Amino acid sequence: MRNVCIIAGGQSQWGVRQATLRDMFQEAGKACFADNPAVTNKDIDGLIVGSAYTERCSFQTHLAPLVAEHLGIKPKSVCARVELLCATGSTGIIMAYGLIKSGLADVIMVIGGEKLYTPQRWEINFSELASVDHDWDGAMGLGLPPPIFAMVAKQHMKLYGTTEEQLAMVSVKNRRNGLNNRKGQFREEITLETALNARPIVRPLKLYDCCPVTDGAAAVILAVEDKARHLTDKPLVYIRGAGQASLHNMSANMANWTTWESLKIAAEQAYKTARVSPRDIDVAQTHDCFTISEIIEYEDLGFCEKGEGGYFIQEGRSDFGGQVPVNTDGGLLSCGHPFGATGIRQAIEIMRQLRGDAVRQVEGARIGLTHNLSGVIAAHTVVIYGRDLD
Amino acid sequence: MNKILEGKYAVTMDMYPLQGKEFNRIYPFYEFLKEGRLTTTACRDCGKKAFPPRVVCPECLSENLEWVDLPTRGKVLVVTEEEVGVPLGFETPLIHALIDLGGELTLFSRVVNVKQGELKEGDEVKLTVFPVDPVSVEGKKGAVNLQERVFFAFEKA
Image 1: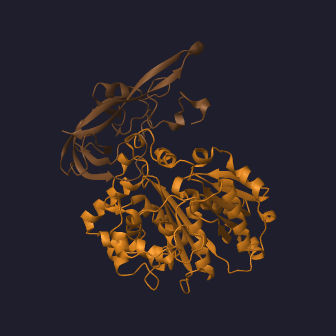
Image 2 (image 1 turned 45 degrees about the vertical axis):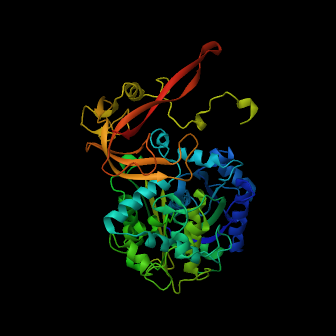
Image 3 (image 1 turned 90 degrees about the vertical axis):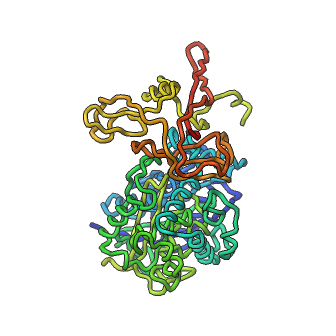
């Protein structure tokens, strides 16, 4: 089988943007090509576009040809859109990985984006009713995810003694990591006190425990190894393995709220295909949509034992200098979360960490991991990257 | 809303499911709901009881399904109270609970007719059914048929 490399990545400005979805796709595409001047839009043979809310917030389907037209890309191997809500971006990367590995495509741009701020704020909360099982969970008003993750947090706290302070520490760390990330939504440090005294959203989750709603786009380019050698002057970064798993969709069918079984399956598959173990991971970007999410992800990705996630953050083991720095670019809590772009942002940060040119560099990082979750904790997506093939 | 859309129904802006038999093969669920029954489908071939109701058994793929009743009373396991970001059409704070329906099913349900701080773990709750916005369905020769709809939540028993 052929080897696949990630050779370029860039993103638009993220935040509350005075821009359309297509404006931001153009910005992200340009930033991606600017990251690696050795590759141009003429080198791309396939395009995968990710967006979850393109129909709802931009009234636009058939997105891939539109983005191709705007970026001067003339796809001949693949030109399609993918959607897996919050994990749309990493899903696009897995699809591109498979297409290149199989020989159906050589050089694919994966680009994802979301325009969520429409002229009236009620619309986004209302549109969220389409993200859960609309006919059952949506009709119960389970739109925006805070009630779901508050339910998770309450149970994790009860079962394992996780504290509100430990939740807040995740937010403090990720805000600090995102301080110098020019493209992120938030670039202000917060203290533990600020986080603990913030207004409640759904108790025990308070303002800083929750990632924001974000406009933005991001893009990466994947290439087959022999072409990658000619298309970049930077160190090669390989995709080493991936896994994606789902065991339920509707909340009623979520068997275990505090151990995410489908995350464990996706991670096991990714570790197996990459031939690494959790201890080998030098740097990770995990889906910190809420602070409790990152804590459970430490556990279910195998960075620590079940129930020890709270201590993992408290002891600094997910910080710089610790066992495995997590969300080194600020994560969703700091960068924001335009659904279709988040998985791609994670891939860009891991690529930079492994190339050695990240804003906040983990010294000597050679193996990195991204984790994306989507829906009512309904699907998990894990990708492992490496400077080496084994 | 644009003037041309005044008085129009758009499925993409509807927070509730279409319940009429012209649109939904599991319409009996809503008919039973109107009688105060909470039901789902069970497979006559393999015995699998699934929720939400199906037209194909997710275990053995049989279409030989029957409607069965679920308990309409349950016990609150965990409560959440949403104070910010509640979707239009729902009250603030929006209260949800994980409800154990006699060990048969654990539902993450909206709990109504209760104030913030009033619902506790261990509380008994019971099904409540209420009307929701009807749907205007276009018939022949410009006729408009109003389809009544219901949905459910739980309230303190």
